[in-house]
Amino acid sequence: MEDSLLTDVTGVILVGGQSRRMGRDKALLPLGGKPLVERAIDAFRQLFARTLLVGDRGERFRGFGIETVPDIHPGSALGGLHTGLARAGTPYVFVSACDVPWPDPRVIARLCSLRGGYDVVVPRTADGLDPLFALYGTGCLPAMERMLREGNYRIFDFYPEVRTRYVEEEEELADVVTPGRTFVNVNTPEEFETIRHMEEGMTIRAVSFVAKSGTGKTTLLEKVIAELKGRGYRVGVIKHDAHRFDIDHPGKDSYRLTAAGADTMLISSPEKLAVLKKHAASPPIEELLATYFGDVDIVLTEGFKKSGLPKIEVHRRERSATLLCRGEEHDPTLLAVASDEPLELDVPVLDLNDPGAVAGFVERTFLSPGGA
Image (tube, helix red, strand yellow):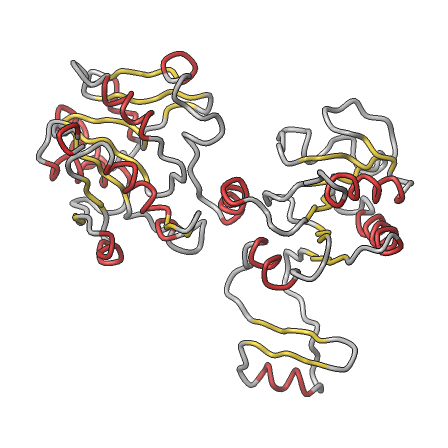
């Protein structure tokens, strides 16, 4: 196997980003039992005799057994790419960001096979060029260094100055690309939630009711809950609140204990319990489902419109003429629309004023034999 590894191409994984939108280190996010960066390492080990991790946080990755190199010019992906190319000691590098959940060795091998006579081999997808999943040669170094001095960090700006091979996804990679996966990366908690749902699936049945404010989704949801309860199902509910809220109030013992600094406080009585738990950021929806809803048949959530959960959108003609999930954006997780007017859509349209029909759709889709 080692005899077939590429020796003139070094794998370079960029780990120097600050992950500001994610709120925690993207490289170490667990997916399918492995951190994202390890998924890239595993793919590169199948292809390259040498792999580098490039970034100023290399000490975090010592356990992976991969050489780490600090940035020569910190603060940008272009700087990381330049560092990898300057330190690799090979004519070429193949670079990947650390936040690519499905780095496909077949696609990487295909791109590397086109390197002869070129300084850059970059895929062009329906979303545009992907400069952080591409091959670069040492002939790019002068242009990179000039751009770094000038403070221009847009990688593809130097492409016209070097020999660049644009590889069309639909034509030259169609037989090796997995649509919706190969060129995906993750930047926000919502994107990661969607990706984790695609990778791991949901063990607890859940559907999210989404709508523009003032549409009446809470009214519909409470009627659907009553319908499902009447049919004998155990129902859980999660309400998403984008703002801060308090269910604890001054003067109560529980408030005093929380105010004293308790990170988790549980109130228990013969009939019910409540948990107050502080956190720096909203936990992923899968974590909430796994932690609190293992004893129910179905979880209905209100909100979470950016999540990867299956969705039913609530639509009221007087509120808006457009939909959240079938307007400017096409949300692939949309299952149905509950509407007070007829609509021509690619998903079922349910009667907003018939909660029994909406509950029946949820039952057929999630709770009947053969359902999700």
